[in-house]
Amino acid sequence: MNDFVVNIIGLAKKQHSFEFQLGEAFFNQYGSQTVAKGDFDAKVILDKRETFIEAHFEIRGKAALVCDRSLEPFDQIMNLHRTVRFKYGDNPGEVTDEIVVIKQEQESLDVGQLMYEFIVLEVPIKKIHPRFQNDEDEEDDNEGSMVYQTKSEDVPIDPRWEQLKKLK
Image (cartoon, rainbow, N blue to C red):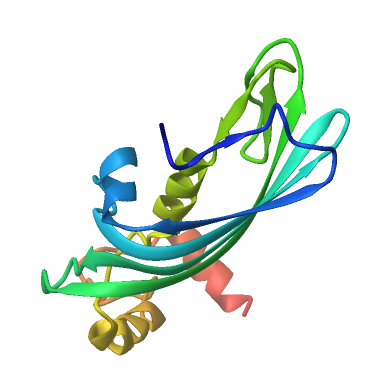
C-alpha cells in the first residue's frame, strides 16, 4: 500500500489533517530525475464538503541539488503552500493546476504525486550553489545590456535619419 494515498470515501464532511515525512524513499517512488534526494515535512489539510474536497499543502524542507556551475551538491531550502480543489464530476481529469475533477465513487487521493510535482516545480531553472549567489545577482544586473558596440564609419547614414536627428 502506498504511504501517500489518503482514503477519502470514509471521511466525514469536515477538515482532516495528515502529516508526511518525505525522504529518499519518497523520491524513489515518485521519480528522481529532477530531485533525487531531499528531506521534507509535509502537512495536508483536506476540507471535505458536499461537492468538492479542498486540499491545502504545506511542504517545508530541503532538496539536495547539484550546482550547474561547479557540480557541487548543495541543499535548496523550500517552503511551499499550495491549494488544490477536487470537484466531483462525471469526466475525471485535471481542469487547471488548481482544479481536478474526480468521480463521486473515488475511494482515495494520491497526494504524494501532487507533493512531488509541487517540489519539482519549485526547483530553480538555474541551480546555483549559495556561495555563487552573489555572482549571479551581479550578472543579472547587466542582463539585457550590450556587452560591446561597434561603430562603423564606412557605412553611410540614410539621409532620412539625418533629418530626424536634426529635429532633436
